[in-house]
Image 1 (tube, rainbow, N blue to C red):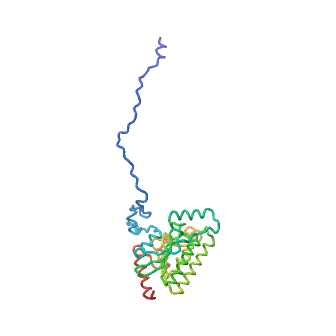
Image 2 (image 1 turned 60 degrees about the vertical axis):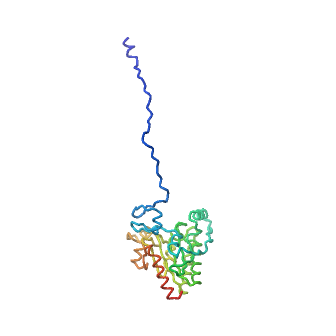
Image 3 (image 1 turned 180 degrees about the horizontal axis):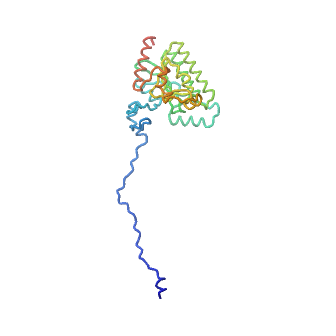
Length: 293
């Protein structure tokens, strides 16, 4: 009897499991449209993209100069943004049959609407005609291949024919390795064209923006009658790490910046973007009056 008692199992009533009900009011996630706001890489300030564009892509807080694409810069510099473009039909070939090169060129073309990494043409600044070239780092990091060199050389030759000053804004990672020695030849081609301009008494203003490096910095970008730069621009030939390993020395923190080059006498002036049009216009007007352009 006792054994039967201990063997019995107590049965408990099983209550139905309560379903968890979320009584909190539903809140829809608000998504910020992509590209509406931009965070400054230097000071971290948040700016509306539209306001940043109105401010010539200069940070309101720290004056950091964001990259400008070619047509943004043309619009900011030329009178009423009026611009007659040269050679926009020139496209790069694949002379070395470099793997996937043509696909990458086409991809950059689709993303930017550009045929190459430089836009050349003519317009006026304060009423004075100029030939202008603007490199765009969005296209193959502004690297200089055969077409970039050809467009710059042709623009300089047109300036010689028309007796116009030449202004070139550089933004480049250097020579384009996918075209090998043909890209390196553009250093000589552009330099030779500038030698012709100099012999003809023409004016060349070079403006280096962030970054201006490699074969571009070692050729036409450093051959201006006036060599200018935007604040904070990285300018140099080889990279900091390579130089430090070669000379076995620690380089200054501001090495290869526009401000460093100005102190060392390699630049004539570092110009804030908001002052660029006014400074260029004054220089062009001065030379135009002097030489009767």
